[in-house]
Amino acid sequence: MLRNFVCLVIVALHWLITHKRSAGNVAIADASIIPVGDPNIAVGKISSQSSTYEEKGASKKAIDGSLASSYANGDCTLTKKDFEPWWMVDLNSAFQVSGVVITNRGDCCESRIKGAEILIGDLPQKGGTMNPRCATINSMGRGETMSFNCAGMQGQYVTITIPGRYESLSLCEVQVLAHPWLHVVHDGGRSPVRNSETDLGLQGRVLSFLNESKDSFVVISPMQPLNVMEFTLCMRVAAEHLGERKVILFSYHSENDELRILREAKGHLGLHMGGQSVMFALPDLSNLGTHVCVTWEAEFGLTAFWMNGERSIRKVHNVGHILQSGGTAVLGQDQGAQNMSEQQERRFVGEITDLYMWDYVLKSQDIQDVFQVRQFPRGNIFDWKMLSYKITGNVMVLPKD
Image (cartoon, rainbow, N blue to C red; front, side):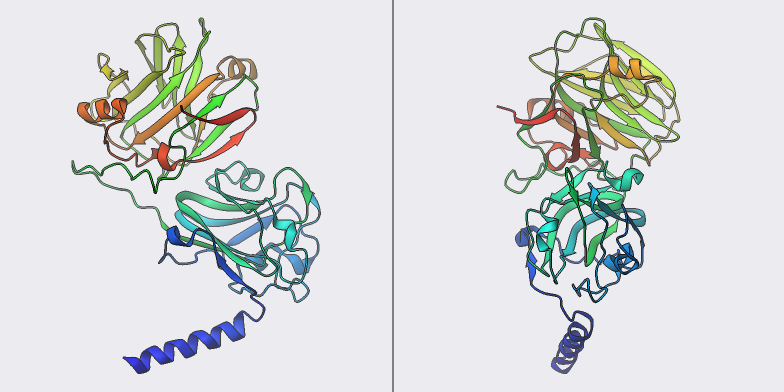
């Protein structure tokens, strides 16, 4: 056994010498929480970038499996000086990304990457720059390799972009540590909530939508694709001066399906899914805050709203429907609106917090526990404590208290 171990060490050293000839320093960000064991799945995948300075700086140089960091030697990518340049890799299907490891340019210009963001999600448009953020790169040394924890964010596309300025983006290697997403089957057992010391996301904070600007919304990334035949969705909402306006609370939209929760008019909330709608007469939303849950299951179509822990009557809605995956979930904007004026009318102004979604119908006691902020099952589609999100426009993250 000792001989085999020595052989493995020799092989590893030989690989480092021959394949990582100028790897530079290796650093780990938040090493204590970086997941281990997931393979690098980016090598050989299809990549693209906002522009290419010259052939030597092609996007594929960042996923060739080498940590060599000299652009002069042809080891790295390089864009032209673009406004908000980006580089993206297509993983071919959805993965849960535990971490992204980046190697910075080693022969010069190490500060160019300062402020770059790592984004992960299912939207390829605009180089994936509409997807939620995993991490921001504050700084990297010349030739440095640094790892960023992405906490199992789900998506097909991984993007590196430099927001808000004209810059040249150069990457010498991007490793994506991930495994295929797994659909969790629930047999009645429930996992406790995470310990607050290890939670990520928006625990203890709210998203504050300050005005009705068409460019103010938040894209949130599910931890597994929304391919479900039942669900529970809960959130806390505070809003005022609504009058008779329809206001969007949650919007999910794909090429083939949609799921929307709206405040239809004073005293009515609605669930729209798969081209069908159902409305409930309920107390109106309050500027003091209202806890709202929606439950639905396909077998009998039983649907109910829960307001501050109290259940409405049940109605039958969309029997046999399967909510399709591959879409985008947004807060603050109605993706299903038919025109710009309708979309503008339905924009949300107020605060949203404590959003959770499960791919099954919670028991009554579980919903009471969610409302009372007691111990309850983790959200396996969305969980506020570890939510991956990307803010666009005039939306602020504020302390809850």
